[in-house]
Structure formats: structure tokens, C-alpha cells
Amino acid sequence: MAGPLEGGVPGVAGHRHADESLLDDEKSMLANDPGGMLRATASAGAQVREAAALAAETDLSMLADEGRPRAVVVAGIGTAGLTGSILSTVAGPRCPVPIIGHRSPGLPGWVGAADVVIAVSASGRSPEALAAAEAAARRGARLVAVGNPDSELEAMAARARAPFFAVPRRAPARASLWGLAVPVLLAARAIGLVKVNEADLAETATRLDADAERCRPGADSFVNPAKALALSLAGSIPIVWGSSPLATVAARRFADTLAANARYPVMAGALGEAGRGRVGLLDGVFGGLAESSRDIFADSDTEETSATRLRLVLFRDGGLNPEEDADEPVAVEERRADAVQTLAERRGVRCDVLTAEGGSAIERLASLTAVPDFASLYLALAHGLDPMAVPAISEMKELSNPLPEGMQ
Image (cartoon, rainbow, N blue to C red):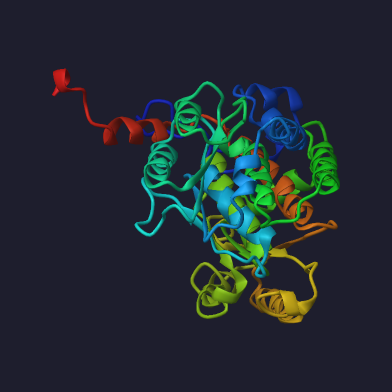
């Protein structure tokens, strides 16, 4: 195993090469996760149940009484911003109004009294969500807020007499996806944009619980799908593609967690877009060219055999709706996914495939996020990284925030 990284940057520690043995020692693994990211990720099913119960206490009558809006804007950044993509994909292509994710402060100039704005922030204090909520109230748009109770966002919603979904913050935002997403979905249900019932939420929570059990720290790599996926990605440049809009949301979620937790550079997107140009990466210097030059008889520890290569992760979704309800026929998506797997095989580029399961869109999305969420954590731990502590994030905030006037 390589020694710790040395760069003179306080708080930066870890190992250049992943060490599989680190994932076989549960006690040591948990010690390297002092922030409890594994535990927080395992709470996904509980988040769904808690969010649904808390949402039931929120008065949405005013939101529903005013009828269908012209458009819905979901404002937030990071994981909070991803909830807009989740709402859009669960609503599907037949949704009667546009659903727009907004990840910058303020709101687009066209937003007004005919629209609904859903401001989302796990902390309740993100500048993007607060600015969106303030602009929505000022312009007379219907406002819904989702975030930490007793926060600035809740106070702003109270001043605007707007519904507020309280989501107690018990973990970093990236480990609170379902606690934030469920209220957004239920707010959209109140205005008739999605069909999410209690059975869908219960089945989604059950699936997340089952996947957390399969991916528990004490399960060995050969039976733990998250550890197996993490080790298959170790030392590679991951490319994550989704075969459908729903699968693409999951692919982008995986890219976010790999970057934030394991510090891996990742490319993610829709397979349809990849087929217009990015699929050429399979022929490139990290793809087919690297694989064709490999000496199969070389020592596995030599630099040549350990060279960085692409690793393809394909998220597949057979779909639920009749083909006439989809953006494009499911058969087209499936043929495209088969084709890219064949291309990767011909070039020697290894490919991991995750296939959606479940009877509703929300459950199928959950089936594509649970194992990858754990995999990003196990990859970090295999490199000796604390998945929660990211010194660069703190430094970025310090360097980009203006100094108080007295210190300038």
C-alpha cells in the first residue's frame, strides 16, 4: 500500500492507491468515518418515512386551492438542486407544466404571480434558496420552502405566509437526498403535477432499507455490491451514463457523490447525448488505446499495468410507462445501452451495469442511487479518506467570502 499523501496542505491525507484490506475491517472502517457518513447514508429509508410524516403536518390547502401554475421553479444548489431533476423525471414527459431547476441566486426574470417556486436548502441558509424565496415573495409567486427548522428559510416562509416543510438536519446535505426530495414531490402532488401515493413512498423506503442492509459495513466485498463497485472503480476515470431520463438523474447523482466523497473526477450524462460524441472516449488514450497497449504478462505492480484507465458505469432503466408516454421509445434506449456495452467490450473497457427495479418511478430511482451512494463512501475509505472532511471546500469558502470591513 502506498504511503500517505504529502503535500503540505493541512487536513489532506489518504493513499494514492486503494487498499481492499481497509474495507474488510469494519471497526477500522468506522473509525475512519468519524462524521458517520455510512450511518447517515443508511438512513435513506428512514428519511423517506420521516419526510412523509412531517409533510402530512404541513398545510398545503392554499397551494392547492389556487390551481395549476404556469411553471414550477425548484431553487437550490448541490443536492438540494438535484431535487428539481427528481421532480421532473418523476412527473415525466406528460407533465402539464414545465419544471425548471434553478441553481443560481435569485430567479429568472419571467417568474411571477402565475408560478410556483420551491426553495430547497438542507441548512435553511443557502444564498441560492434564500434569494429565490425572497424574490418569489416580492413578485407574488406561490412559494414553498423546504429546509432545516428554525432557520432563516423558515422565517422567510413565515413572513410570506408560505408552506414550510421542516427537514431536521442530521447529516450533510449530500447524505440527505431523500429527506429533501420527498417534500418537493409532495408539494408538486398538491398542485396535481405528480402521482405519488403512500404505497409508492412505503415501497421506496423498504427498498432503501434492503439496499442499506446489503451494503452494510460488516458485509464482505464478495457479497456487498457497494464494496464490489467501489473496488472496480479504484484507480480509474469513471464515466457514468444513464439510458433514460430517470437513469441519467441517478448517473449524475453518482458523479456528485464520487467527486464529493471519494474525490474522483467523473464524467456523467445521458447516453443519448454520449452517442453524439462522447462515446469516442472509449477509443481514446484512457480507453481502447490504453487497453490495447497493455502487456497481459507484465507484473501487476508495474506502472504500465496500473496506468489510469476508463471505467464505464451504465445505469439502465427499462421504463414503466407505455412507449407513447416516453420522450423516446424504451426500445431505443435499450438498444443504445446494448450498443455501448458492446463497444466497451470490443475495446477492453470494463463496464459495470446497474438496472432499475421497482413499480414506481420514485422506487426505480431509489434502486439506482442506494448502492452507488455507499460505493462512493467505500471508495473514499479504501483510499484512507474521511468521506465527510473535504478541506478544499472549507478553503474555497474562506477564499471566496469577503472579509469583514474591519479586517480589510
